[in-house]
Amino acid sequence: MKLLKKEDEGVIKKWIEEKTPGLRCFCCGHSKWGIQQNPAMTVLIDTNSARIHYMDGYPMIGLICDFCAHILWFSAPLMGLKPKDPMEK
Image (cartoon, rainbow, N blue to C red; front, side, top):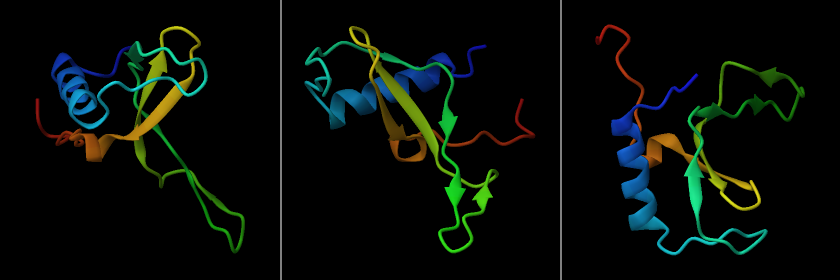
């Protein structure tokens, strides 16, 4: 299931080109990346109680190295991807 739209991919590609030109994989050194098609979410952990807050976290976009499959995570909101209004069609 693909959750990113073409317009989202354009926003991500533009951000990557502007903010990380020439980005190379830290593991293998290659510079060709794919965009993970399903945004992900971190979870927050209360360090005092060790309770995991499954509904709280940070939306992330993964870039996957086309050579070794190493994934780099970037903040989706800081890349310009905002949640859509649930009432919007």
